[in-house]
Image (tube, rainbow, N blue to C red):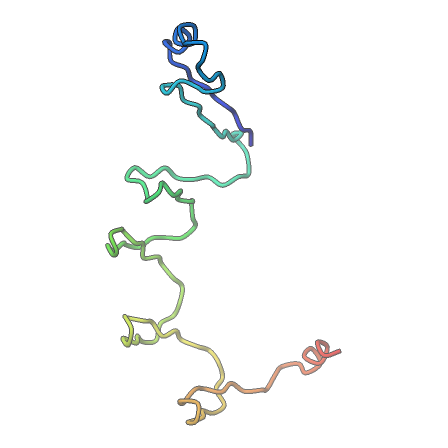
Length: 137
């Protein structure tokens, strides 16, 4: 990545410098002159690639390219929010605080404790106890 400093001057800037009084500050630039900083990436660089959005985001935030598949969108809080596709297996939904999915679990449950609010307790059976003991030094 290279940083280029681009300077633009107005055609009248040169004549204004000649006609300026001798008491003017020498380090200041005329109001109509602008300084621009630009970043340029080589064509096959490994940096992030940003998509250009026509409508733009607040504060001109960039949108990064993603591997997510957007199924649909909905409007909330003044903007369009994406709904992405998921490989999650859903058994049912819980609507206490919004429509929340309950994922199907392949956990082998040994029992439930009513003291903990009927939370499931997984079995302590493991396939290979030697592997577990190798972590304990």
